[in-house]
Length: 227
Image (tube, rainbow, N blue to C red; front, side, top):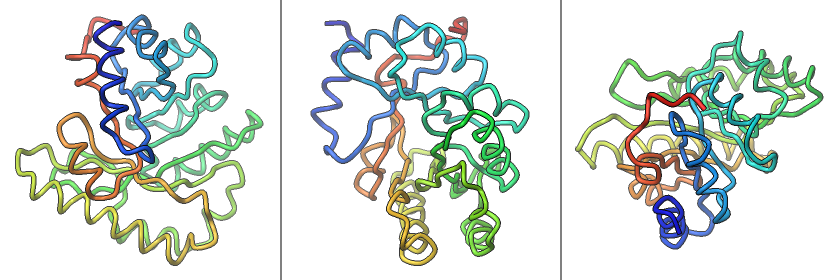
């Protein structure tokens, strides 16, 4: 068994059964993804459109591709025919565009709304207040080809685990508020995606249902690879 496969199996034993492992394969070649796939890993995360398209074209068709990076509206059309879930919906305009391209592809695409809770301004996403304001309108309800499945967030890149926990807890608070009000009759609104290789344990303790783990599985990113 390869090192990648061993780590996948170890993580599967460690993670609670209700938590979905998304193997973040960005910058790693297709062969690495195959090593994870052969031991049953089906969910993979990519952050660049060109890379996710290239890998989709050469890897098994039952892989569930998760778009986890910042997504430009003019590139949605390239992934709409196959992407399983888009995690990085950070504006109403992007959600509208996904709906339009999903309709063209004859699909309904699962989406997570990205919440900005980190101290870093470089990260994207709705603030809790702007998200509540948007969802309080009827605009999103007129988008039949998107399925809003929950929230995604990234914590501040810091060694301060208390700060990370506070940020993750704020995501759960917002999720619970939405689940008990706007999405009370929407069972599909059920996912909280947060936590990466360095903080996924904190995320799970806070209530994450999906974690994105890359470096621990595949090692350091290989920026020389594009497929």
